[in-house]
Each structure stands twice: as C-alpha cells, then as structure tokens.
Length: 424
Image: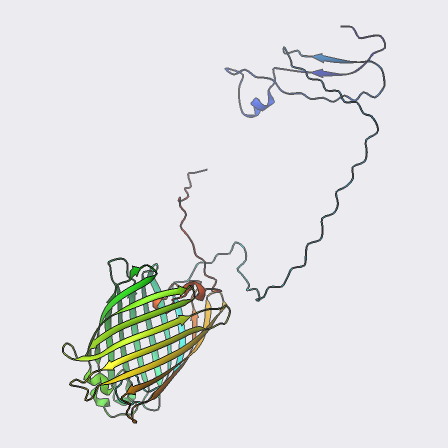
C-alpha cells in the first residue's frame, strides 16, 4: 500500500518472532519447544497535523499488531503533590516505669540452677509443743534449687547457721519433690541434720517421707496423702534453755516416730485466689497412740500488680486426746496471717521480704500455756540465671505465672516440625 501524497513516515517497529526473552531466561532451548516470540511495545508521538504512515515489518513470520490512538485535547496539567501526613501523636507515658529488655536478637542461655540466700528471725513459743516453750533465734542460710524433670521433679539442698542466746547451731538439709501424674503418686522426701558444737557436740535431726495423689473433681482437686517422720534427739540437752528445737524438745523425746494420713481439697475461685481445706490424724509414737486430729483452712491471695503482697491466711483446729504421753485432752486453735513482698530487680535477680504472725489458744486454757503468740520475719535473695521459678516446686509457687512477671525468663517451645539442613 502506498502512502497518500504528503504523508510523513514517523517510525518503524520491527518484530522478531524467533526471539523469546522470557524462555531464554528460564533456560529453554528451541528443540523440542516452540518459542512464541516476545512482546514489543513502542510509543510514537505524532505532533504535526495531517496524515501519517506507520510501517510494521515482521521478518520472522506472522505478528499480532494492536494499535491504540490517543488524542490530546490540551497541554498536560501539572501533578498536584499529595497532602503531607499528619504528625504522630505524642507518646503517652506508661503507668509503670518501663523495664529494660535485652537487645533484639540477644537470647542468653539460662544457667544450671537457682541459688538463694536468706535470713529468718523467729520469736516463737513452739506451737508443736503441748507446754509453753519459748524459742528465739536468727537463722542465716544459703540454698540451691534445681528442676530435674520439667514441671515434674525438683531437688533442693541448704546449709544454715542459727544464732541464739545459748550455744549456736549449724545444720544442713535436702529435699526431693515429685509431682503426681494420674494414678502415679507424688512423693516428697526430706532430711535435716543439726549440730550444736558448743553444747558438747549434740546432734539431732529428722527424716520424712510422704506420698500424695491429685484427683480432679470438676473445679476442685482432691489430694489424699500419707506420711511418716522419724526424729533423732539428743537427751544430753534435756533441761538446757538454749537447746536447738531440731536436736531436743520434750515433745520430740516422747514422739520420735510419727505417722499421718489425711486429705486436702483445693479450689481456685479466681485466678489470684486459692482455697485449701484439709483434715488429718497422727499416730505418735507409732503404731498404737493417737496423738492428734487436725482440721485446716487456708486462703492464699495474690491480687494486684507491682509490689502488692502475697497474702496468706490460715486456721488450724487440733484436738489432742488424752493418751499415755498426755494427761489431759484439749483443743488447740491457731490463727495465722502472713505477707510476702517481692520484686525482680533485673533479669534473674529477686528480693523477697515477709512477715508472719500466729495467735493460738487452748481449750481448756491453762494460764501457764495459753494464749501464745509467735512471729517470723524473713528476707531472701534469689538469683535464678534466667530460669524464672522453674526450679521451685508448686507447693511454694501456687501463682507461678504471676510470681514470674518481670523475671526475664524466656519460655521456649519445641517447633511442630523439626528443621532440616537438607531443606532449601
């Protein structure tokens, strides 16, 4: 076709169906595939008026041509820039001071165990005794705790010294806790040895073993249990005012073997409240003498945040029948209240302060033995090496999630599919 007279040739578009750039990038060769060719786009600006010619050449074969014409009605308008975004609102200060967190990407390994140091000031009248027996001392100690099986088994050991008006004493103790699982009972084993070098090297102690089950009953948990305790006393301290209670007391000298059975019923009405009721009886000396029948009711509260304390309230009713070691039966009531404050100073470092008071009276109430008051003050420091409270058994961490807030512990979960280095 010949162009009309006066037509202007504005440009040429060459199409080559033998070249397929997309296929070449993917490594496709011509055989046995057929290349489809490549798309070519060209824009030609035609400014003068009059007829124009567009020439299309396709040396490689047929080509599909699509032509779009756009006619401008006027000069293009300048683009209006979008409005600037509003400035961000000022950052509102938090109610609580922000705790410094580890830098992003830093996930230090946890340490092997938890280590603690404590001080206890005891001013008591020895509630285990039938008769009044004042007891005052300051105990300083260190202990270590370790979780053996995750949320199932724990072990602990401690060493301590006691300062008193009489001869000082030193001691060591160890404990093993195994949680209950279904029909498999939980187990608690403990042992303690105490020495008074200034009292002729008197040595005493105790060994205890108990087993328990945790049976869920809807929102309640029933825990039947049984235990046995063996006491070792040193008669050379009889009549000594400063005798350590773990070496000699008149009650321990007459009750060296103790066997107990009982049951506890626990209910958590709120996430920060725990109610425990229980009953038990004790044979001592074993096996023929009924020493006591007890009923207990305890309430643990941990509401609030920050430095709000852990509140512990308890009531004990203990009937002590007449037997071969007790001349007269009586009923003992004891009311206990305690507060524990704690704070995580930084990752894995915790400080605790607490106080506990007990008021007890007997019915009938001899003037020389009732009422009685006992008090306990304590301070404690723990370094958990990033392990939180995993090294402490549930009996001392009933509100573990709340008690671990601010500890800096990291809970690692095993992935559902283990990664493989062979996978891309």
